[in-house]
Length: 247
Ligand SMILES: Nc1ncnc2c1ncn2[C@@H]1O[C@H](COP(=O)(O)OP(=O)(O)OP(=O)(O)O)[C@@H](O)[C@H]1O
Image: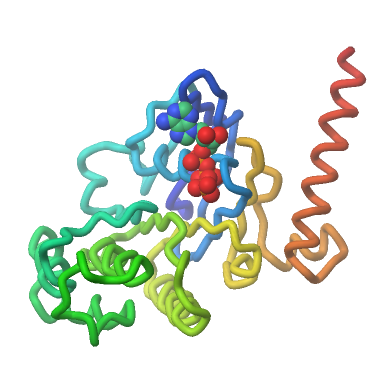
């Protein structure tokens, strides 16, 4: 079984809206897969379904060979939400050591996770006094400290400067090279080029599931932002064509 995540015909309704419309996709193990799409397209909802915290209307989500959300997966899957989930009244180091202890990891392991996200200089600072970008990196350190097999990261690079963003992406690829699977959401198209594979969603529909090079080849353009625009236009032309045929 090569896929860390297999999603089949996933439909999710939130409130009265159909937010995911029969999505099927797979994320191969040991890759960095980008989940891209405009704001409101359904990225967080898909991630929530993969982590097993989203009520689904129909379809299946299989994670590391098990149904999404089963208790056994809790230790095997790391999840970074958009809102930082760290304790404001503990320091960065104390937070990391606390989450490390939950996973049976020692202090040295926690301190390395803090350094890996570029927070060594702020290790003794209370999380409540950090900047937004620093707080999000503290949260990232805590999501990674247990060495999960699968890591789901919801916009981990928002608010980070370009050097830090490059460092974080290098770290993600190191982790993938060591066998971890990463699913990373972003609405910044320039991050697409840093991924091994891309899932592009719009209005709850998957419009690409491919490598960056294959997306470039299919659309005939090098720039991925332009390539995505072409895919979106092609999918909309297809929808209105189908609509005309149905009417
Ligand atoms: N609790 C909710 N109840 C009703 N609708 C919701 C709820 N949460 C999200 N939605 C809607 O579901 C759709 C998809 O939201 P989602 O958060 O998955 O998008 P996203 O692609 O992650 O967006 P962003 O990039 O802005 O985080 C949006 O239209 C949103 O308004």
